[in-house]
Image (cartoon, rainbow, N blue to C red; front, top):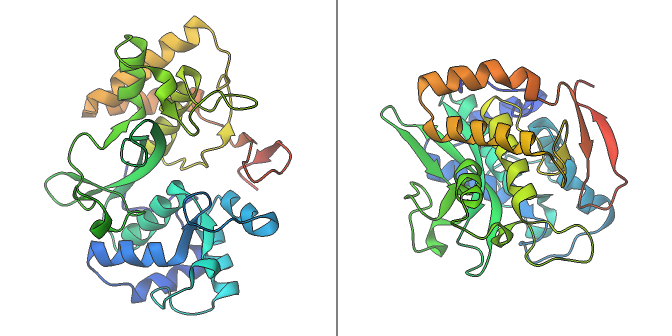
Length: 283
């Protein structure tokens, strides 16, 4: 797969010209991304209604359209936090990915869990990997490098672990799956953690690798809190291939993905509060 090419999700569309003025150095691009977005839960502002609904922007073009309607200035011009587009880690990463692809840099998103937001719980998270000519460099564009004890611009092993690796460890009984998810504890309804949640994220990891950089609240196929052992065994196989990550494994994942992909249709279960609905991704 050519990770210098925009996907339908990362394509800035009519707003591509806004990327022309971006700086060439990667840390500065990350700073611009943080200037455009605010996290719907971690940004220190409670958003409701139409503002909270901004988290359902699936396409970079939609994110940029909202920003330009509200601010109408070059992307590097400072925005007040309240005026930024409301999103989540996936949006920070996708906007960063879009900007780097615009400059011809191979880059992709990676799905997993971060240990650095809560010492007692491992939150679902999305980061980016770009090819520097020798290796894939992992970067968390959501984080200000000055605020963390590790290098967020070239992340070492440990702070972020892929969904496939967490699934493997949980299935082997070496970790507690309930310590991985979106929200710790059982909650008042469906628990947003545990083995079913991790399994869903393995499929998200595969989808993003294949260029379907979906929202983190879309489901399709057999992705559900209840699933069969055959479904779990299939996820075991996918996780093993994702962890191996070599050319042979990527070829097999590419061949298997059409049967596992959303095929143009997902069920949106947004935390914005909108009713669950099936979405035509081709519209």
